[in-house]
Image 1 (spheres, rainbow, N blue to C red):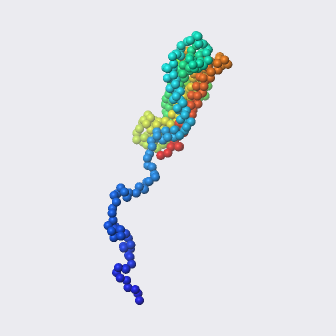
Image 2 (image 1 turned 45 degrees about the horizontal axis):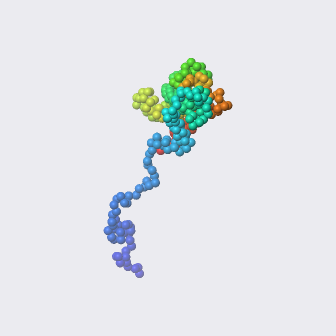
Length: 329
């Protein structure tokens, strides 16, 4: 015989198996506040976006050599501007009783052949040399960016003509031109800066031209053209901001190039004329004492090498930080 089941022993149906809303073990459920039961499914995932400037700085500060070079350059720049102010001597002051002295407490770098304090003259020379280099970098970047952007954006005949001009400047022996022009116009720091900028702009122009050739076919540029934007607006507002990274890197490296070229001209006697000191003409003035007092030539020459190295390391760090291929969202 089949066993009869009482109603209270009937098998559970699917409806009975499902949990009843609002009850647990036939007791009223306690509803927790909404904020206590919300589950954050995005836990562990960061949706914070960083600006390009912040990303660039984060990458740059991880480049220890570049950070050290930047700090050293800042320290040198401060020394060039502050140390001469604190010294009791001027870079033109002559002390006949202290001619050709070696390093001492009164004159830490010694004195030159007519008794001028070499520490003051070296720091003043570094100031003039650094100022020339900064002006050269600014002028070169400005000229090269303008010409390179015009050539790269318009293309065709304009690009052909400007490219020929760029190539012509690149094949001209720069040192020969600097020597010839320096004899006639290179008596002042501003004159040297203009001459150097006139010869160095093709390098920046080629970089900018290549970038504009790449970007002018991008969708955002084509969209701007379709919207009726004119060429100057497209160049300045749409393409140029995307080229700032390589331009900044090349402008930074130009500072080191300008320092070396200015020192070369001054050493050859066609740069800034004394008594205005630069690192180059200080080396030129001290070359006769290299055997008897080598510090008089090693100190300014060492500053030239140190600045050039720091600028190159800084440029390497900026290149890595601004490289679009390493950009992360």
